[in-house]
Image (cartoon, rainbow, N blue to C red; front, top):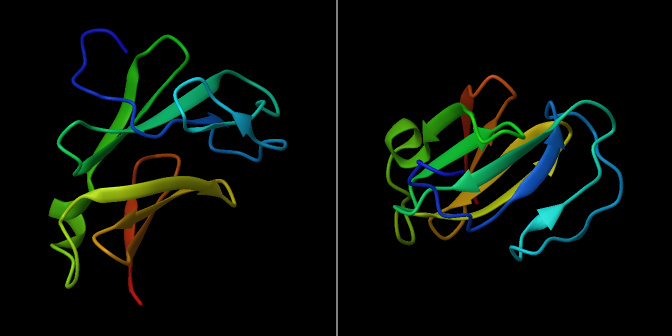
Length: 115
């Protein structure tokens, strides 16, 4: 992702945020799956730890969401994204100690609460 300020803390390969086959270790230490079809999409946490971005196979940014600004500071834990994962065609985000959000393929975020 040349030219962007994204540090790949966690990378997930997606096929238009659709289902992927079994994950395998990625060189970056994240999770990577083989796309079911179409070009792979990468999702990464920005260096500030607050934002999640998606880019296509050419590195073009598709969307960026500031999770902390959209959902508010977590009640417990630091205001940073701790984990991203793919489930049911959506990006699932854990921020703070145990607060959660879901981002769809268009970059729309739903803050789903804390446990």
